[in-house]
Amino acid sequence: MIVLGIILLVIGFLTGIAILWTIGIVLLVIGAILWILGAMGHAVAGRRHYW
Image 1 (spheres, rainbow, N blue to C red):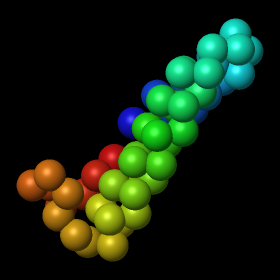
Image 2: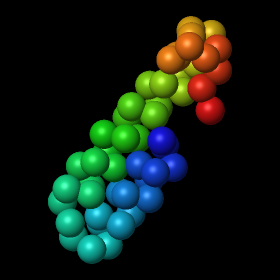
Image 3: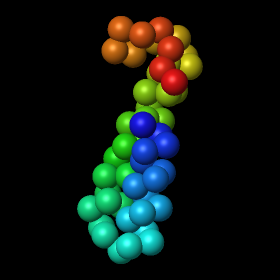
Image 4: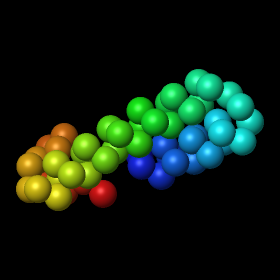
């Protein structure tokens, strides 16, 4: 999810499409939150680790 967010950010920046930029930021933030929760040992969506 983090990688997809970064890809959308880059594509949105290069093409000037604001919706891709916004979706990229949202995916990046959600991916980072899930990654941090998984690293702390909390179960995320039934998994002990989130990659």
